[in-house]
Image (tube, rainbow, N blue to C red; front, side, top):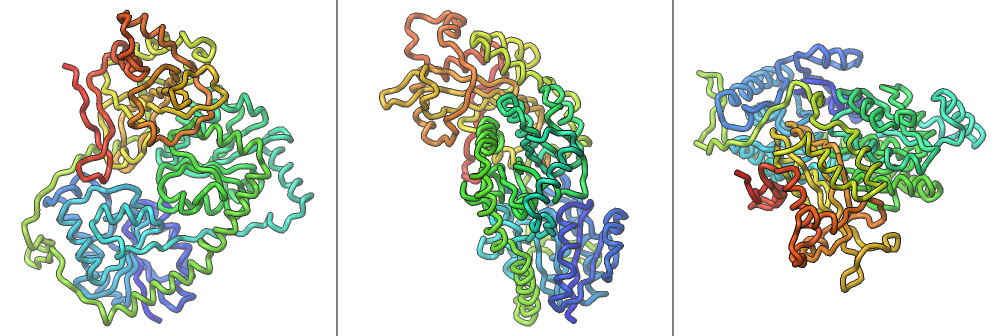
Length: 631
């Protein structure tokens, strides 16, 4: 049997490591002998210890750090260590092909270089490249030259394929998408209606929920990536209107206690249950009314694939690879992460339209059975392995920009490349927000009091400003755009002000209208950001949101670009209240609601500077552009 060495250069057990467990039997069934090459890590070694497969251990793990962003001695030392160990193992095993299982973009580059130098074809499967990753120029050049030689690169979604190309410079046509599959046994599929109802009653009884409960669930690790704050914020807004609505969280993680405290602060803990890690996830998928995925990024959203197999209706954040599974509203409902007011409306729609949601779920199940089936996955894996074997005799091993120096036992660049520096703030020891300057209940405060009387607007801003002042302010027009925070890391405290303009609808008859009949309304959402994380996304706390109904003549330039839901309720500001606060002259025509609100924010918060989100010179990602700096 041809031998395939499967390298796992990980430092922890995650989805990428579970992936190998799932494919090992398929590798064998397709006529290949797998050999696992594991890092010297007890947790990972124990994770694979029960498998009946040959394995060996080596010093191949990779941990990303600041040193990776420049072509310095620390980076070259790490790369050389992995290269030397991979070379030793490959010379020992003499495999016909190498499969490098990568949880992150550049974790196995030393292994790929060793395969190149020993002329062994390699398959590089990157499980997660959700944004344009900063790589030093030498690393980018190595990736490009390897892709033109004996290394083949794969991602688990097209979204990640695009980001990998932007990160490495590898041409997109040299990167292939290798979709994963998720098929689990569904013992509930053959149940009669009576049997299903009995199972449902047992679950409700176990959870101590009413018989007429409407249940939504979320599954996953409590981390910033999963963005569970969206469901908590939206749930707090809709649960009064949906009295039988309950939400269940299945999972553990570093932010679980934070979310539990948030649920208590929002006074919704009686409707939210944190059930921890469960072995019977499929039971919940089969018996729940709705599955909600809030992830800001994924390699491929496997939890959505699982929910689809149980015909569970789905609402998902329209980010990363989710739209490759749910292409349009025929299959499920999508919203932009951070647009919790839109998520509110989607939850309401699902609650009041169960038959329509069930039809979407059936459509998605059929789609997944075709596009993400185990049969297709096995065939694709077989083709990839066979193509790698066939390429061994035909591969052209063109030069790469590093060579191994035997005397120093180090990889050295063949030419002088610019030592480009990238911004890096590092991964904090703890990503739990222990000392937020503003606790979550402020959002509840603003909603309750502003709903009663719009004149509380000014009062609320003053209350918030007592704790938050002299911060930098980021202005974001439209909606919270996670792409910005995929490529920029913040270490300072900011206020993020999202300014959106919904379209007119009949439910807002008090709104003024322009000459084209559209209501001119601006929604201000103020969020506090303490910092962002290396390898993580921002999770802002919403502290207040208000809507104006004043003339906003200067907003036409960007209003056409907005894609927001028109049917949501907010609290209202008063132009007269703002004008009296500023003691403006009689000539108020120069002030629209945008400038009035910004002047109010400026006077109350006294920010140290304003920044705007905009495209950088290359148009690849968003960056902060300085508008004004306060001395």
